[in-house]
Amino acid sequence: SQKIEQNSEALNIQEGKTATLTCNYTNYSPAYLQWYRQDPGRGPVFLLLIRENEKEKRKERLKVTFDTTLKQSLFHITASQPADSATYLCALEGAQKLVFGQGTRLTINP
Amino acid sequence: NAGVTQTPKFQVLKTGQSMTLQCAQDMNHNSMYWYRQDPGMGLRLIYYSASEGTTDKGEVPNGYNVSRLNKREFSLRLESAAPSQTSVYFCATRWRLQPQHFGDGTRLSIL
Image 1 (cartoon, rainbow over the protein chains, first blue to last red):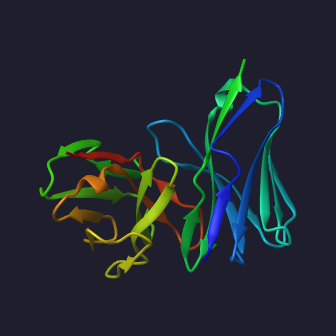
Image 2: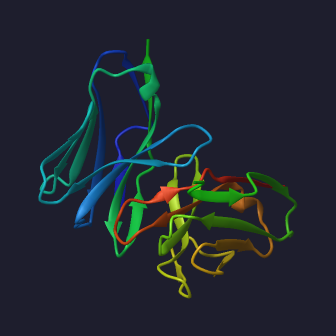
Image 3: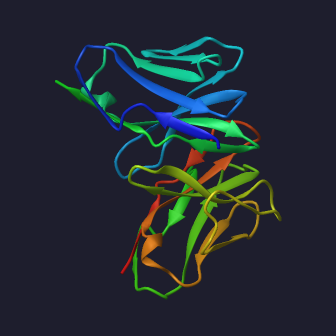
């Protein structure tokens, strides 16, 4: 069956370091993958989209990679700040619907 | 410019009661979605509507019904609420295959 897994439920990082979140999937051949940010009490907000023919995508301090051979996406936040603390969700496209991972709760410690 | 508006924000029900969660969008998007979010489970799709007049089941449709009233509004109904339906419910919209836009959720507790 199709499965999406984000490597950890929670991740604690020191301010200024690079945070790396992982999204693995099985039994999918997605055309693209998306990353969302969710703050407590709020709905998810779209951050980045990467297509299957793109290896890497950047937006300011954010970087996403997509390896269709490993069936994995990595989400990096460089020079992390306490304001980056949130839950991050990956999502894959399947039959005009998005399927979400369970999320990783990231905490950046000052 | 509200985007996606969900009402109510909070609700407490007793087992067996019914209620309708409302979602309205002003983004002119064709597709609308209802998800539930439970701890450790991520977002799970309940129902979606690819366009006005159509609805389809998602991953967890049992116990729910939906109505796509018009292009702007997509409601989710619980006919006979059960404690297992305690969750946070999110509505989302989408234009074609663009990223989804979410409301801020309805927190529903069923006693």
